[in-house]
Length: 321
Length: 297
Image (cartoon, rainbow over the protein chains, first blue to last red):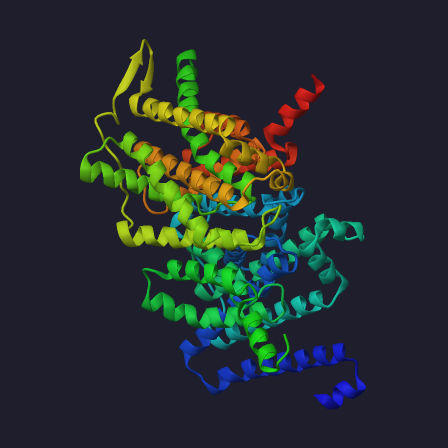
């Protein structure tokens, strides 16, 4: 890398390294299902990609803009149900995914328009409220089957690889969006809002529209992930896709990985996606307890998550502080 | 709807408002002093309800008395939680991301502990009082609701006395109004915050115990009440104790009378609708409305 840093500005080299790393990762993940054809392995990675997508999406708002949301299951569920309803109406699944993104983004405005008008804890509070309210409504709604769930009829032959690549593509799109935002004026505006909203507003960043846009984008990605999940699962019910634990997981991943970074949520999503299966299988009784303890420990001792911890170790190793 | 029905509904809304106020006031005290939104409130309410149940079942203590005993017990728990966890959070003048996530994690832990200890079956506290009513001519009042209401109002009055006539109360009110000015005037931040946190959790436990006498509960039972408490404190303006009383009354009235028009399953959606309306129309809460009226007068 030193050859590059001699001729190129350090900022570019850093970007360049990140780009090589992400392309290599994408390539490896695209090839791996062809080498290891085990269906269970593909399923594990498939769900992990969806988690990575939602983790990146949460980080756009919760990390970059610093607006904690406890209600991302709303978008996941809305996306899942939109895709389910459209696919049963005979719409092509990929168009249904796009429709899911649009519906979720619209719903995000319903929460954001009132809640972002005010500073303070109002948004976080409103997200808990809406996720409960939406689940209650969906449990009682008759045309989606209410609490007993909704079945999706697939018209094409089942191909696990197609699902796999759809999820991988979605995660890659989410990562690209996150990476671009982090390096664009929009992302700088978001992190200015996180650090000091008054100062950001003084410098000409409109906090209201910035938060709304980040929220809508995050909702669209989460909704699409919900849609892809619904098509794969072929059966969804409000207690699952709208469930409280879905919101908890979506929030936990970026916190584990390291919020307000590009790679943190990806790392968190992978670690969580792979470890979660084991945890839920081994300790079904106490997995919420483990999530809670993990959250508390990270907040108190390593707010930067895994990435922050790694950075600290690397810095100590090199003798810098 | 006849006049008698109307009066009956009005009375039940009023009786409900008492316990709603108790469950929200703890959150207001904690938010006011420390600017922390206590998401774990639901978990502490659940603990209070099971505390009352255990005392009632094991020792035959009257559940209302048991709920009152939950207050000192949960006060101690709150003090310990503050000392071990909350104290370590970065101080701020507005709610921070770490504080939200920490309280959320604590809620998950409490809820899961509840499941481990008591399982997920619905429990309820049943006494001869539960089903008996007092009849005043055509108007009937549930005895247990009346007792709960009296206990709730007594505790709220006690809180007001403490806040207005003790040094601790003065420092709490000073912290709510202006943290820096309070620190300059010699308020001991850690001590005040610790006691205030204990007080808030104590009220959560008390509210849980009282609610346990009214409804059946399981380890997740605090969640719908957490959202109601949010609605109430937002209606009240987040930091105003008298605002909480009015907010509780408004929510209780809206919920009770909405039963006439909307199926009971959608009640939570109604509380959320009220929250959205409050955010759009009345961002400062009812307290700001009162302040405006006072200024105009």
